[in-house]
Image 1 (cartoon, rainbow, N blue to C red):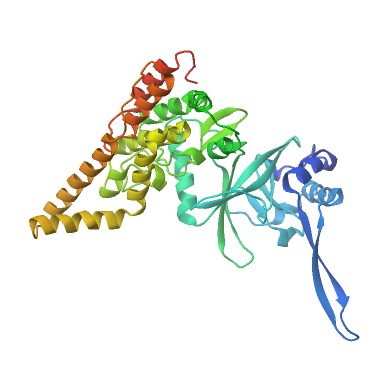
Image 2 (image 1 turned 135 degrees about the vertical axis):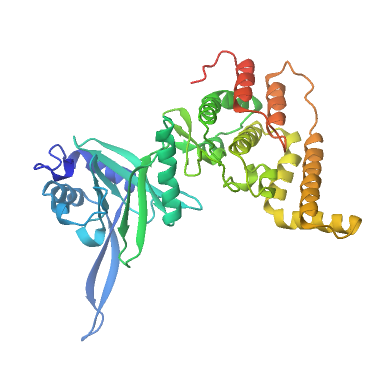
Length: 405
């Protein structure tokens, strides 16, 4: 293994990476000094100073001298070197492929229910550095889910640029177990990308959906392999070198699963009424979520009320179910639980189908915007059974000159 070799990081040069470190991290060094506050007493004063080239030289010297090799690792061949251990300004993680530098505080790239995403820098054995991101998982469950997702992709021969690398655990200063991995850095997520656009027109929306055909194609491939993503949304479509790819893959599965993890604004409402969902039903839910994503991009006013209904029902699901149950009991009297549950599901479906039926029909089907609207309406049907293959076929009809890949 490389980290046990006789020569450590032979190509690593402080001057070459100093600028990138300072640009990416803008690290402040915590410092302290003793000041005399009175004749007999001193007080400790903490302050910060900018990261300097001499700090980077210390990091490089520490790595070249192999001072990390005596530190404990978690059995994976990865060694976590915290700042309290090294007395260096950045956290250092040694892996068989190279070294990661990162800093937790004030360097957040993103945040989710299961993890924090922070800035990191990867330096390979030749001393070449590239920006990346560190995933700091909230708990063991989130960490295990992410590792399981990587195994699913590998099992089915699926490639994703934002798969996790170098999963490892370590002990914090307080003795708590921490969970971490590293991933490629995205330039933006789709929501941020759109928010940066001024005067986002219908033509811009159409062009963007056309650029997202590779996302639909990627999802079609996953579904054909028996995999469901379960959390398609604007924030989980990443942009890297002007290419769009599905990210945040911790929730992918290749077997039936209880419920789902989809964000509420994108969740197919019927899913929360089912104790169990088949893999096919979860794939239909992916199609629904992608349809909601397209609807949010197209920003057609007529979608607004239905999107609001989906969001409201998902966010108030228990109260919504309770109101339906109470109405049924009031109208029909006491019923067995199984009979009542069946009626609740039937009533709920009817309510959502009616809301969907209120969407105005597309008038000029020769228009690309109207063709997209018609496709979106089919995708966001509350009990839709449209497949990604069918979606891809219709996208190819609307945008015939665009490659799938």
